[in-house]
Image 1 (cartoon, one colour):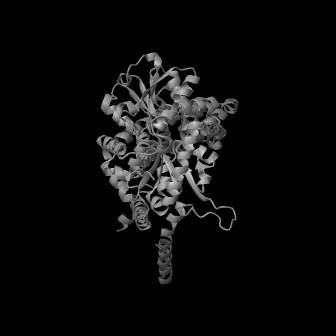
Image 2 (image 1 turned 90 degrees about the horizontal axis):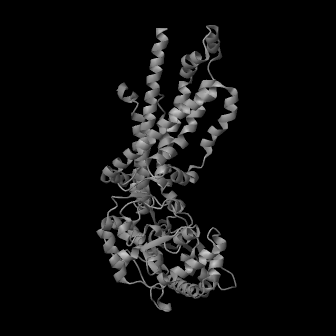
Image 3 (image 1 turned 180 degrees about the horizontal axis):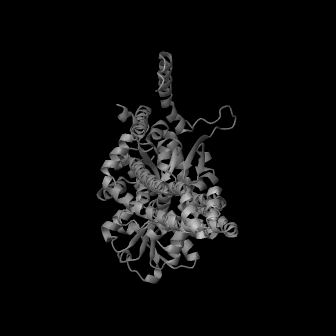
Length: 338
Length: 260
C-alpha cells in the first residue's frame, strides 16, 4: 500500500517541478559556452586595442592554411586592427556547427559543405576562397597504367570518407558496382600495401607522402570531371556579417595580404606551421606549397585573390541538387566578396 | 486495475514518454536549432522517412555484432575454463585477457584493416576484441567461486575433475557468465560500429556506423540521432535475448533440482 502523501507534500512537489521547468531554458545559453561578443578586448589599455577574433581550421596546420599563418606572421592581421586566434582542427571538427552556434566567429570549409549546411537551415556565408580550383583527386598507383578516371572504376578498392559529395558524382558517372568502397580515415597505409587501391587525396598532401614512402602515385583531379567547388573557404554566420561588416572586410583584406605574402615566399609561414605540426616533414611543406600555388591563384591577379563568382556557386549548387545532396538552391545568398 | 499497474512494460514506457516530452518542450522553448540538438519529433520523423535505409543498415550491423558476440562466447568461455583448471596457467595467461580490456580499439582498428582487409571479417574482429574480456573475467570468477561445501560433496563421492567441472562448476558459474554476456552484448554492438568506421564496404549503403558518418558529414543531425536510436535498440534487443536465455537456463536448472 503506497502511503497517500499529505496535501502540503503534494503542493511542495508541484512547486519543485515548476521551479525545475523554469530553470530548463537557462541551460542552452550555458551550453553555447563562450559565444557572444568576442570583439570587445580588455578596455583601458594604452596600446591600440586589437579586435580579438578566431578562425577555426578544418584540418591540422598544413600548407593549405599557409596564407592565414602568413597573415599573422607578417603582421597583416595586426595592421588591420585584428588579433586572430588560428585554431587547428581535425577530421571530425564540426566547423560549420561551431560557427553557427557562435563559438567561433570565422571558420574554414569547402563550398560544397557550406551549401549542405545552408540547405539544413544554417545561414552561413562564404567571404574568401583560399583555393580557386578544387585540390582533391583520386590517387592510384601509376604502375596500373590507367589512362583516365573512368578506368579506375573497373575494379579494386576505393577509399573515400563516407558522405563525401563527389562520391555520388563518381557513382553517377562511372558506377561503383565493380569495386569495394571503403572508408578513408586519412591513413595511406592501406594504399601503400595494396596495388589495386585507389583513394581520395589532397593533391598537395597524400601523393607527396606516398612518394616519400616509396610508392609511385598518379592523381586524377576531380575538377577535370566538373566537380570544382571553392575550397579552403573562409566563412562566417550572417549575424556576424551584418553586425560587424567592418570586421569581415578587414579580415578578408588581411587574409588576402597573407596569401600574397605566402605565394611570394612560403618559407616563414611553413617554418611556423612545421613547429605546430611536426609530423609533416619540412621538405613536404615546401613541396606542397609549390604544388598548390596554381590552384590557389586560379589565374587571378594579386589584388583579386580569394574572390568568388556567382556563376561558380550556381554551377556547384545545381550539381549538388542534381545529385540529390541538397534540395533548394540559393547561390547568391551563399557568399559575398567583401 | 491491479494488473495494469503491475505491467512490467509500464515504467519504462512512462519514463520514455515523459523524458521525450520534456526534451521536446525544452528544445522547443529554448529555440535550439535542429543541427545542434534535434527535437525528438524530428528524430522520429527521420526514423520514419529514413526507415528503410536505417533498417537495412542495422540488420547489417547486427549480423556483425552477433557474430562477434558468438565468437566471444565460444573463445571467452573456452579461455575461462582453461584458466580455471590450473593456477599456474591462470597466473601465466590471465594478464593477456586483461589486455583485451585495455586495448585502445581506435588505435589498432586501422591495423586490423591491414591484417584482415576491408569488410565483415575486420568488423567482426573488432566486435570480438571489445566484447571478449567481460565474458572471460566473469565466467572465470564464476568457475572459481563454486560453493566449497558442494565441492566437498563431489570429492566425497569421488567425482573426477571433468565430472566436477561439467556437473558442478559450469552450472554454478552460469549466473556470472550471464552477467558477463550482458555486458559483452552492448560492447559487441559498439565494437561493430567502430569496426564499420574503419572497415565497412559501404557501396550498398553500409552499416549503421557508416550511416552515422554520412549523416554527420551531411549535417543531418536528426538522422544521426535516429541511427544512434537504432543502435541503442539493437543493444536493447541483445540485452533482452540474454535475459531470456538466463530465464530459460535457470528454469531448466530448477526442474533438474526438483527432479533430484
